[in-house]
Image (cartoon, rainbow, N blue to C red; front, top):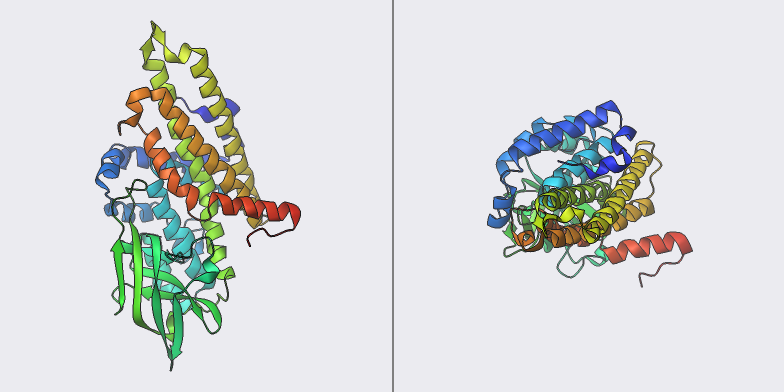
Length: 386
């Protein structure tokens, strides 16, 4: 199948190790996921049995060091996210939440005891984690969260709820952010803790091959050791979100690449007026415009990955990548659907499934509007949030 990223020979910018990692991940997904993903999306099924296999491959928390994590480069992690989302955004979301939110929050802000208890199991896929920040009334403005933890002797009492939490219904441990008298703090809440319940969100039109849940906390008593000692204030969860956003800007390229590959293959095989539709000028214009957009997004992702590996990446640069690459990816997926005609609404083809998934990606880890304002503030020095 044609790789539209060959247009600018992007692979020549990767090291041999990076290309090898990308190839291994792609081969695994082609064998274990791609033949079934349309059915899983239709049935709203998350293939939990894949989790230990993802762990065995080192994909869970792969950019973290120690505690069973492989310590891969940022670019290598990004390329893995690209291949995961080329199959389905839901699978990349699982890996992003597991590694860049749940595991990163423990790795960055946790105590040594917390790291030793959870990170090796999460890295191996023996346990699943989630990240509770968003609330029903507080998404783009997490500082207003109502979930609250109060001290009771040596313990904490946690009350509140979180919404739209990926992995929530299957997680063994939740990183939960709450207001306290000391500011926003993070807590690790294991499944089975009295008063902690989850409910999966049904009837979704997007990310159907992924688990999305509500978390509820009713007088949940937690020991002092459940608190993440290194995180104080909103900077704690926001640092985690930047890790996840980085994976997204690569992942979106994967969804766009897969959509364009499907459109190219279909255009070559679909005969109208006695020749393939790929021979018509309007179709070629669509394909050319999308290929240029795709390659530009990939070069941006790779540039930001190199900055991250050199410890030079700034939050507003991540916003540039997330804003551009998701916006371009969803436009590519929608345009590819038009090339497929009526066949494009069938789950036999990936573009409309990718477009539906990208509707969620466009919103989570910072909406399109919020990232626009982050970039605007970086340019002008003026905050337009209020």
